[in-house]
Amino acid sequence: ETGVTQSPTHLIKTRGQQVTLRCSSQSGHNTVSWYQQALGQGPQFIFQYYREEENGRGNFPPRFSGLQFPNYSSELNVNALELDDSALYLCASSSTAASPRHEQFFGPGTRLTVL
Amino acid sequence: AQSVTQLGSHVSVSEGALVLLRCNYSSSVPPYLFWYVQYPNQGLQLLLKYTTGATLVKGINGFEAEFKKSETSFHLTKPSAHMSDAAEYFCAVSDGDSGYALNFGKGTSLLVTP
Image (cartoon, rainbow over all chains, first blue to last red; front, side):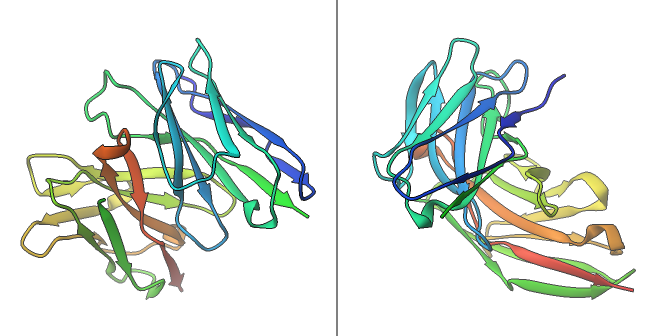
């Protein structure tokens, strides 16, 4: 069984640029959630995708957007990068068929640095 | 929205001593509660979860937690700490209003000394 994978591992961008982060969900999982973890903080929920549509969103501006593909993989896009966007971005997958549905499995994360 | 508070951002114990990491939750409905561990430069690994049923939950690596509704607590314990337990620990509650998103505490860094 393949776990959650994320790419790239590390990324350096400058302010104002755009970035795309990628996530492949665990085999059999149909839901993907994205979290932002700033240094020294707990992860914060960005949004969740189910059936290729956004299925819940945290307190993040519209310049954070996402996609889910038919194979359940997902992308997180961030436009107009700001210095405060520097963080570890975590992807988590889950299954609506599982019990409990709330159990999420995390990938290793992408470390984004904005200069 | 549901939330959790982790008391103590840093906890230090001696190897072999009891580990106690505190988590209190706020919820208007029966919560789903989780403990995750994060090693340096890694993602989150699920230690244990409470959904329904037995209030004492056993997890991996000898950890367990007890759901106490009267105290709105879900503290994590381990009878005897190992050096390998040194990591960041996060308590989380599931928010059914946002597609079962997890709301995390700020984390507790566990240091284990020889």
